Amino acid sequence: MLKLNNVEVIYSNVILVLKGISLEVPDGVIVALLGANGAGKTTTLKAISGLLSIEDGRVTDGSIEFDSIRIDNGDPETTVKLGIAQILEGRLVFQHLTVEENLLAGAYSVRNREKVKSDLDLMYQYFPRLKQLRTRTSGYLSGGEQQMLVIGSALMARPKLMLLDEPSLGLSPRMVEEIFTVIYRINQEEKTAMLLVEQNARAALDLASYGYVMENGRIVLDGPTDKLRENEDIKEFYLGLSEVGEKKSYKDVKHYRRRKRWLG
Image (cartoon, rainbow, N blue to C red; front, side, top):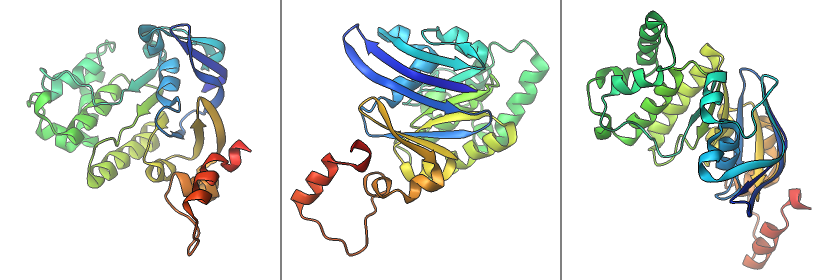
């Protein structure tokens, strides 16, 4: 469904952020994109959704295709119409509107009112808490409730592909589990494909079936998530695991972190 081929992104005609990345998201599949802060994950999502144009960024090389249509350097309105929804980091809701008004705003492009009503009922099935709060002003919701609302609003547009940017950021472990359970249900029941950017590597690898690892604007590792979980570098640098009983001096660790296997 989605294909990025050797994509390069530059901001302000000066700052090179993506340095020739390639990745794919098949129809109906959850794909994880892992990496440290500053690796280029959010820029990758914005290159797909068309949000680069409002931040003085552009794709300067390579191609981005969605359903065989070139969308590199496209605008957000076009990508939304094609069926791509990006859920931005930071739980951005219309804070002065109620929960239900936010959900209905997500369906602004849907002309069939009966379909909007049925989709609204479906969102309340996925997020019963939102039904209880449907008349509450959104600015007074908790972080987890706002994250549910952002996801629900995006789903009201019935996207083929959802771009999720750090959906677990700042949430309690219980709320993270609840959010990820619903994300999995949506994928399984609605067959919505997802590209998931997530610092919580363990949760992301449990949810996705395929994953990519980014460092310094490049894809340095990819594979099925069950294989990635067994990779020694993933264990050490993303899952916080190392061989039991293994002892390393600070010098060894510092050297090892410079020479990660995938950089060799």
